Length: 252
Image (cartoon, rainbow, N blue to C red; front, top):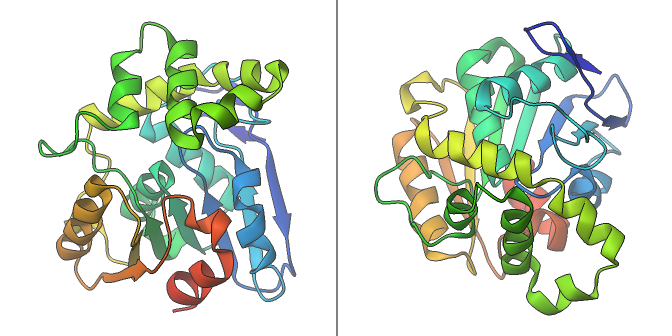
């Protein structure tokens, strides 16, 4: 359990596996995901790393959560889970911004950062037709926004095949979704000149146009960053191609 600076208890579900004596890596999931989405990658890491996975506030087993869902709260949650330990932080999608914001604000806790297809939605050129942009437009109805986001993410047929209880659970995550994405569009969470740790930036050969533009842009902005294209991979590469993801992005 972590504690928000305002003083109220903020329950965050977390799991750690691997030898506590091994180097620590924290895996931070994206919007409308949860720590389970990092399980296949974790299993490729936990034999020689200590692996921290957690459900970000408002998702999975960190529900219900009263918020806020802004970046300051996201960073506070991760810092609380690190508990003074330095780690490599891997952030998928939105989670990449949590990783970089943590590196900017708490460099003593971050040995390095890996980001994969992380949205730069505060940039004026970022797509206004992406799933995230559409979710923000639907902020008045968070449950509808969550359903629409999931339909675009996994496909309508797969969504419709889910049990109603599962769909209701995902709709309930809509408040976290629209709140964190609206905050991201309005407030730049990190600046390149604040990042002083090694950074690996990844995107897939099957990436959407905004990520094919955004990830090279981020790598160019951050001094010394390494840009990697994962052949044959799409947005969910940490889950679909965990061995390749580890070999090309985390091992270096």
